[in-house]
Length: 270
Image (cartoon, rainbow, N blue to C red; front, side, top):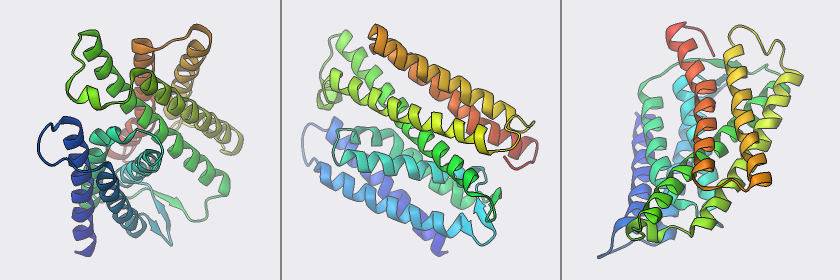
């Protein structure tokens, strides 16, 4: 009962924070909440979300990384990176999409219990690999949402409609700079995650890991190609957006797509 109650409170905090961000973007008259209020409510949801994860994922038997638990843990990492980054950079607008998604993951984790333990006896190389993978995925998720906002902003400016919420976004050049900062950091973490997997994990190309490995490497190639194109040819705008979203889709398929097939179709832990 307590777990369910806290889950709904965390959900309300996330949705309230997203609503405040939306009001700052779209509302022209009446009360508009300050940016600090939206962040404070978001952090409250993040703390409750952390409590829920500690209660449901971590146990003496190991770490439960079943599909819904892994989704909730990943969404927590994404929101944590978003809110901490928002303290110094104008990226809080990403919360308009990411906070409701995190709220949904909390509800799903609460009502759809599943099991997929990583044993407590698992070695530190595996734990480092999982941590690096999760951080890489989270940062590149932020980059994908940033690319979506950049696409909307670019569309409005090309069609000479700079008003509305687009006017509240940072300048296009700043948005692009933030996008490539996220991609660069995420690419470095993804590189380390892949290297740690190849170096420390046995049989990375086992039957239940080959699709995940191949798709992750393909995503790494896409993001690496984008960074090279940016450095050598000055890629930006729609080219950067398409490459970012393409690499992100591969990452989704690599982790959550393969995990869903293994757990719900083949009834195996992924």
